[in-house]
Length: 116
Image 1: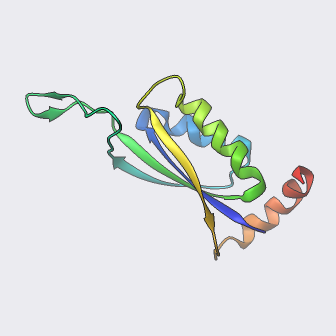
Image 2 (image 1 turned 135 degrees about the vertical axis):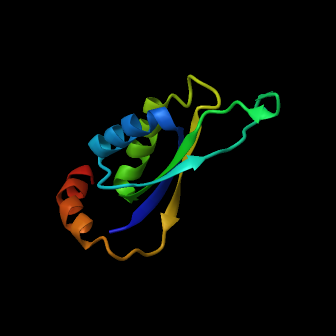
């Protein structure tokens, strides 16, 4: 079984909705890094030197490769990446190897066979 790592940077108020949707789409777990910040095409606005930017969370999801694209698209839809500029970003990278996921492999085996 091969895995992909999905990294999603989302506004903190969207985090729970993204996690719920990712789980429904096939993700079996996640790690959340809170209080991240970022910058896109446009510089963030300031008010008397204070940045006016939404707080972000970074969500890491280790997912089976056959489910990864569907999960990635689900995250983009729920977080509103296409409809609201600056709402976040998500991408996936190949994972060469992983340990500590035996319980997830057993749970995913049946679902992945259905997808293939």
